[in-house]
Length: 131
Image (tube, rainbow, N blue to C red; front, side, top):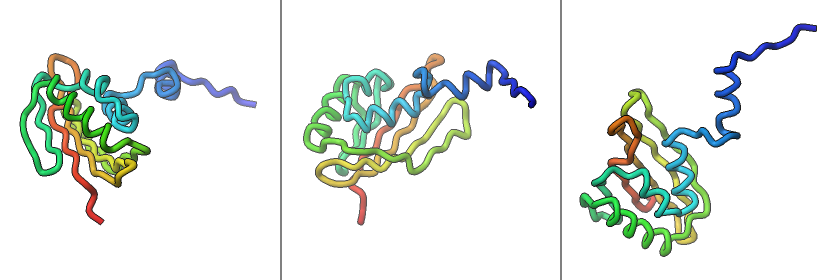
């Protein structure tokens, strides 16, 4: 019987989700699913472009946290599913989620960009899903 050898790198990749080494893109999706505006704001750029209910503006990290906190209080998240992910660049990522809340479904899109060697959210769009 042959023994299967796993390289340390392959082993790390296989165990990464189990030991909490998820990518920033996945962490953002999980925090949105949890409705955790406070932890989510830690991943925001100093200024972030937010579009919510046809209202688009650039907000500071603190302002954005308050806006999302209000949204999550009014629309309690139940589940989130990644619909689309574009990570063709090591420095920019784009993700689209379907967010199921107690009030309905929303389409959430966010763009992350590397700033000072850290991936931060620079744009967040939340719109009611069209049926």
